Image (cartoon, rainbow, N blue to C red; front, side, top):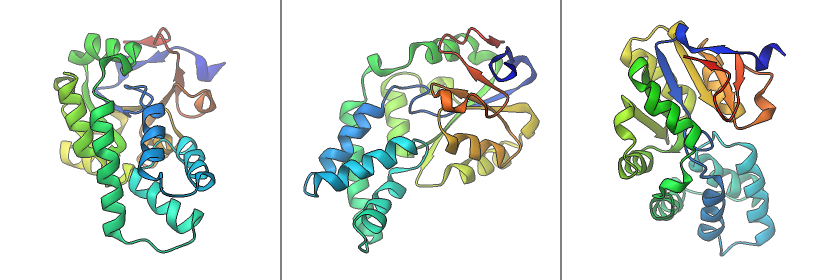
Amino acid sequence: MQKLSMINFTKYKVILWDFDGVIMDSMPVRDKGFEIVLSSYPKQQVDELLQFHQCNGGLSRYVKFRYFFERIRKEPVTDEDIARLSEAFSQIMRQQLVNSKLLIEDSVSFIRQCGGRYKMHIVSGSDENELRYLCKSLNIDHHFISIHGSPTPKTKLVSELVSDQKYNCSDIIFIGDSKNDWNAASAHGIDFAGYNNLELANLGIGYIHSSYANVQV
C-alpha cells in the first residue's frame, strides 16, 4: 500500500510533533483527570465527554470543557469557569504525567537520534505551560526549538510558528495521532504522517509504524 510505504524524511528540514499519543502515552491519565475534575456531575454525562475526548485527541481541554457544559449539559458556562476547571485539570496532569515510563520510547529514541538533523517543535492541543513544565521535568525540552499548546487552537499555532520562524511549508512534516493534527497540517499545505492511530493510515503522505522502521532519515 502506498500509504504504508517508506517515508523519506530526508526531504524535510523541520518536524512538528504532537505530544499526547505521539511522544507520551498520556491519554489514560488525561481520561482520569476529566473524571476527577468533573466528579460532582452525573457519571453518564462525564462518560459522554470522555467519548468525545477520546475521539478528538487533538482538541484542547478548554474546548472539551465547553463542550461538556454547552452540548452535553446544555447550559451556559463562563470563561472563568472554564479557566478554573482547566487549571484544576492541569494541576493533576503536572503531578501524574511527570513519569518517564509514560514516554513512548520509539518516538523519543527517534527524537534523540535524529534531532540534530532537523529543527523540531511540539505543537499540541494540551496546555502550553503544562507541556513546557512536563518536557523540562522529563529532560526532553532541549530537543525542541519551541513548545506550543492551548488555549491557542492548533491550526493557528502552526500558522504562527511558520510565520515566526519563516519556514517554507514544503520543508515541514507534522507527526500526529489524530484527525485534528492532519487538519492543522493540511490547512497549511504541510505534509502529515500518522502515528499510533490506524484510522490515519489513508491520510497524509504515509503512516509511521511503532518502530519507525518505515522511516528513511
